[in-house]
Length: 86
Image: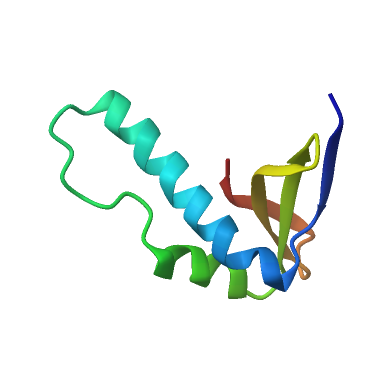
C-alpha cells in the first residue's frame, strides 16, 4: 500500500467536498437510526477552506484520493486546529 498526504489541488475540491460529506453522513447514519438532516453542508466545508490560515490536504492511497484534512494555522499564536478530516 502506498500512502501520500499532499496539498489539495483546486481541481480536486468538488470530489473532496462530496467525499467528505458522504463520509460524515454515512458515519452519522450508523449512529442515529432516524437521521433526517444533512450532517456536513457544503457551506461549512467552504467556510473551513477559506478561513485565514487554512491549509487543505488530500490523502491518496494507491493512487486514489481516499480522505483528507483541513488544518487552520493561527499565525499570531502558532496554534493549529483541525477543522475536518476523513
